[in-house]
Length: 312
Ligand SMILES: NC(=O)c1ccc[n+]([C@@H]2O[C@H](COP(=O)([O-])OP(=O)(O)OC[C@H]3O[C@@H](n4cnc5c(N)ncnc54)[C@H](O)[C@@H]3O)[C@@H](O)[C@H]2O)c1
Image (cartoon, rainbow, N blue to C red):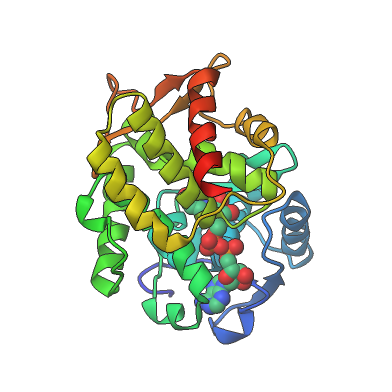
């Protein structure tokens, strides 16, 4: 038994090697793995599962941040067409976001999360005590996802205050959005706010996901204002709060590289990028149930002009 789940076969723990020693889960095999969701790590884990005679009754337990949750989730989704999965997220970002909603993926040199699947865990075990060892910069990465949820859905989450109650509220908010639209046919797309530009920045410069999402959320808020959906006063409030992140465009900076990486964004349709926009803090625009808006290259250039003026 692990919590309330029946475990019919072996239990294999796959943990971030940097923190694996800190947690003890009774299991048949522990695999420590570098914190990267690469094809190489994916293949290595699969090989270990074969070498240790794992079968489709084996339960995988992932211990780590969003990187490990995504990687192990994808292993669980694909090994023998699907193994029971338990996630034990250990970063703020993984607790409030990556462990909830069933998205699993690995990165490729062509872009982030381009190989993956939707595969829900049997259980997520979040112990907020793990956050005591989290460095401040990692805490801020998690805050970026909480603030994003504040911008798109629940204005009470748009604050830098982050006690246990606030964390639980953020988890429940994400769960609610996912439950309403598990397969991302419409409403769930709001969670991609900040991620179109954010992923471009993240991939072009290899910066942490949360930091890129903070920059992307600010940029996509500006875009919302530039396109006439968000008023200036509301945007000012957003810009003031993000000052606490001391955001700067990463170096070496190349607009072309970022736009190129954004080109691989999964929300692209027929050559046009579709971006989630807001009309006030706490509300993403529905756009007839599509929850994203086609943005031309020229409009995007305007946002990048503004970013470069203020954040280089
Ligand atoms: N599946 C989803 O829905 C989803 C959502 C958001 C982000 N993600 C993915 O999550 C990844 C980012 O995850 P992340 O921000 O958690 O970073 P991460 O998993 O890369 O971890 C960041 C760092 O924190 C360390 N760490 C982990 N737990 C710790 C602890 N308790 N104490 C001290 N150090 C600890 C790790 O070793 C690592 O060095 C990205 O790949 C992103 O694409 C997925």
